Amino acid sequence: MTPPDPDPTEPARSASAAGGASTVGGRPTRRRMVGLDAARALAIIGMLAVNVGPDLNDGVAGLIYELPRGRASLLFMILAGIGISLMTRAARTERAPLPWRTLLWRAVLLLGLGLGLQLLDHEVSVILACYGVLFLIGLPLARAPGWLLVMITVVMLALGPVLWIQLQVWTGVTYDFNPAALTDAPGPLLHKIFFSGAYPVVVWVVPFVFGMALGRVDLRRRRTQWTLLAGGAATAVIGFAVSRLLIGMFGQPGEDPGLDRLWSAVDHSQMPLWLISGSGSAVAVMSLCLLLEEPLRRWGAALVSAGRLSLTLYVLHLVLLAVLVRPGPDTLAGGYAVTVTMSLGLILGAHLWWRRWGVGPLERLLTWPPLRRRS
Image (cartoon, rainbow, N blue to C red; front, side, top):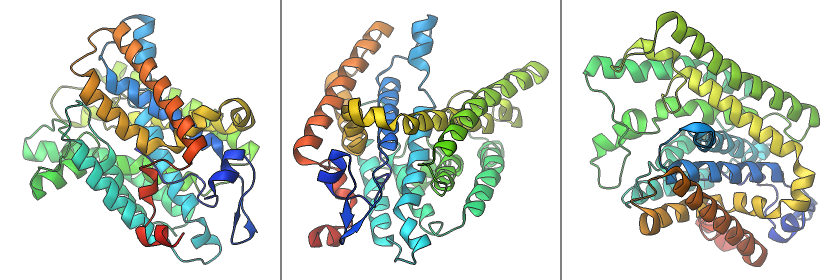
């Protein structure tokens, strides 16, 4: 599950590995924002913990284990939007051609990969199909001004969850979050991707376009990083607090689809307050990683490498779950053990790969093939 390269102006492996500036066509480029790589790696670890299971939250250890649920995936989605904005920066600011072939290729690749991976017995809802469709949606928005992206985010934050609820009310069918797979017929497949699956595009377009808007601000600026950290943390708390207040006033949302769901902040509820709170925590984590870029360059190289190989690690963790882990673990201690072991192994493996070969094996597929052959 990977967004585009967070700093596509720095394609040279040797320069970025050394932490220095690179050149493209003899021109110096900006130094890579390794904080975004580290944030992506943390999102991988969080999603790995959620996907490993079990779904237990008893005691402090259980609550800590559950913290990434519904938050790590939002962080991934926001980073995806940021990546597209950074990737298309030259097309907006320098009148350079829009890399539409690469974006279209990535959309098709991620869509197909996601639908195929869903056939494995890993018991995970694969997010890549949603990614692929959102890349297609992001293509016509690549040159849109930041204010328009913010407006789309706000409008879809209000309309997307309501439409998701009302479609269930109108049809009398409660969505069961079954993910789309390659073997689905076209009609059910599209319905799962856009509405009834685990990651309905009608809702998840919100963090994606929000990420595109964030990619238009200067994320290298210290003041921006501190502002996003404070604002993200406050938003995470406020979104959850407002939900608790509304539940106290009107009671818990019912089990049947209805507009009373709108005050829920439960993870993956697809509701506005969850999107607000979860996205706030994601922005806070991302901002903290950006603020710690220099320490990460010195002492966090392995974590940064894992973020750079995020697609490879995401796919690999699904394969490992299907082949080695399932049907367990059944206890919280087992979940911690599997999560820690897999996380350390994947991070170490990614770091060794990056030092030896640079770009990950699956990340190499993200470049439009004719461009890759000419490089």
